[in-house]
Length: 542
Image (cartoon, rainbow, N blue to C red; front, side, top):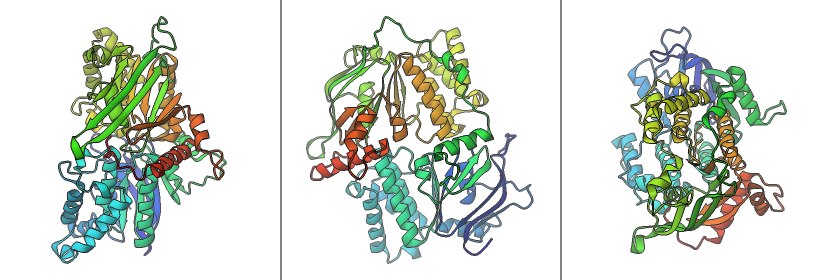
């Protein structure tokens, strides 16, 4: 180790009780001060385990000789005093950041300052703390929501607040475990700018775990893990001529066999009745509106939404966090009642016969509707029973889903103990266990590694080709490209509905004549923000 190493790791191993394979297998890693590195890898690769060891929440294996973990020259595992010194210089944001949802935004930040600073540090610094809090909230776009309860923020806003809480102590080393999961592309850029500014102005070092490879390409260095092993450590500017995503996926494939079984795909769908014509309208909405609150506190979460989606379409709802996508989703599938307007599934009005309308759809929520204390198989059996599948049909269906989504090895694990990506595979399996004609997917690949996302979309495309209608929200713009049509939503209103190619044409300019889907999203949203700058915000509904 040299003096400018903020992290020095050598021969790091970590094996969990009851597991044969190590979660981390002989890892070497050095991070210089003022350096930013992206930590990437497939689900279950060991990324979170690695970050938790660095911040002292987990201990490495003691049985391995030559293992070293040094943070700014200090070994956190030698004694309690060392561990406390290390914790003082680290800001760690886990995937599930512990916000107090019954406290406001400003109360969460003030509490976090109190919990993480001594009385001596806080005395006389009230003004300085207030200025820092306001600066962070302004950066994060939360300055107008200081008095909003954290529980009433959209998913993306909660992530931003979590990042603000992590940054409030001005750490020397920032460890972020997928901070941009569920955050729209515009907000992701803003989050990155916040962190880059802190690196520049305060000299902090950063490890940013991410499943967004376009995000990882913005770093000077990427560190790729797969099955606990280091398989790449270097610049994202690949010299092989491959696209960065292809390079990463090929590296992962080299390290392990392709897990999802293409041959089994046909087992999970039997197609639907040929009697239903291809142009049949499976999802319909007219004037769908949701208003929360009354009087001055009233805001419109969804404003006069109109949709007409045909059998076999993959229809995308896009928009920044708080645009009203989740609200629209929940109205369409009957989870919340619309203030005005009407909707139907397979021709059945949601307000007239909600039970029948819901029987035609499978729903995968952002917060997966899984039972954490039940095993993978028990969850599948429960949902098969709820949807009324005969016992033998249910067994065959569940066996096929376990095969297709590579869940066999986890079938006896409690759902709460699964890696994030496998929780999502299980959630999707539960949503389609009854082979529904309509599938609602609310950010289904958020936090999932690139290889699994590609394989996931193979399944979605196959389902659509066999007649399933798919309504999906996503913050991955490369995924939006796979949609038949896209409706862009901003402040509760539909901006435009069209094909991905036509949306890119709308966003084209002299400076960027051939925009990507991500370019188009950012450009169209920024244009609308400028046009509506004088209009009050709708309050950031989900």
